Length: 566
Image: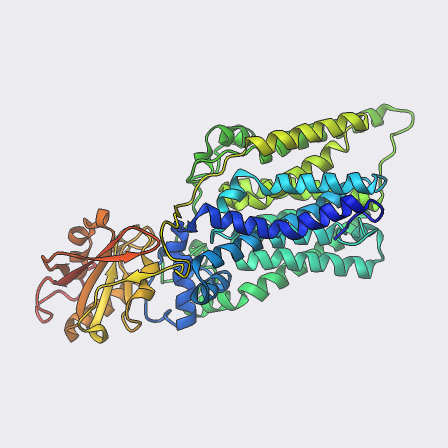
């Protein structure tokens, strides 16, 4: 951490805020209420439970497509929630997410000119870091298990290492240090970013952007190529460290290391030959893509599922375009000038240039692959740093540049408005209440019971509330449907249902009350129907009650068609 050495009052203020900051964000997370987001109820809770209890061979796709996501990132939260009360877990998660403040401070310190007085440098870095932490997207995710603002620790940490932050005089070491230390530095930076990719695949947009930026940030061609190469090696190592085991599991069980994604390439018989990509947010056409930050500033539903307001990425987009235009004009003038203008080739200048390129390229990759705002949270946080770095390149007096930066930071800080991801008010719940508490009906024969799931509602988080010997089969969801024919997932469930009917097992349907239509439209495809009895509620602390309905075979096992799906 870089702090002033001469200005002791500023040093104490900065150090105090950087130490207290993460804990303040932890308290903020608690005040926002308990996280009850859709993804937590769909897979974050279940996947960790299934991994720790070995349910992968017992259940079939209860968390829909997310059943096949790497559970590693979910394990710490789930394990902590087994031990500590929900409020403590929220505080810890919010504090971890609040640690981004320290990394943003380091980045903002590093991109400022070395000649800047230390006291002012620290205060500016602190203001930029705070601005990056109070964005509409980041605050909305505070204390939630989406983890985009946890993964940002790896992205921002990798950038800080890459540009030589965190040590006095180390700015730009990747471009100025001898080859060995420089390549080790960028490999470590790549390891951090790659670890983020291994834990959450959409982080790949930052891995590509930060790797490619080395090719354009300056230096000899071989130096640029080798920096990018060693950074890429680090990325691959980080990915292998945190997702290698899971990719091997998916390959060995489903013949696709990314199952079900890119199944149009791998052709796993367990799914349909489709890419399973969600590309509905990606803008169509070059003009729509160019205007996209302006479009989602007016309509945030273009980049996600909730209403929020934040202009950080938009402001950085405009500032970087203006900075690029200034650089282009400067270059064109140099072509016709008697003496070309000098180009700053110091390590500090190249580090700043690299950071701007990494942000811009990562945005372009995000725009092409996802265009989902949550996946851009690290860039929302980084945007004030990019603005600081870019405006400092403008050919204007220092006072003008400082005024522009201050006004932009102030406007961004006061105009942001966070959305909400299904927070659950604490209400009168006791302090010792846990994150997920489920009350399920008592089943008479748990050793001879099969529970089916249908519909699109997230219900897999309820599974730990049932006896552990009961298998759960999701026969219909946004991921799987009997109309998909004889893919192996459908075949596996059909065989399990047929065997259960032959053995006289009890069958139940776990379903949301607004999706009971599936009892008439989906269950007959598997030779089952509702028993005509009232359904029983399954209550929890994370959602409204779901229904558990007894279901029975359409006809006796000996007489029924044993291939009802087809």
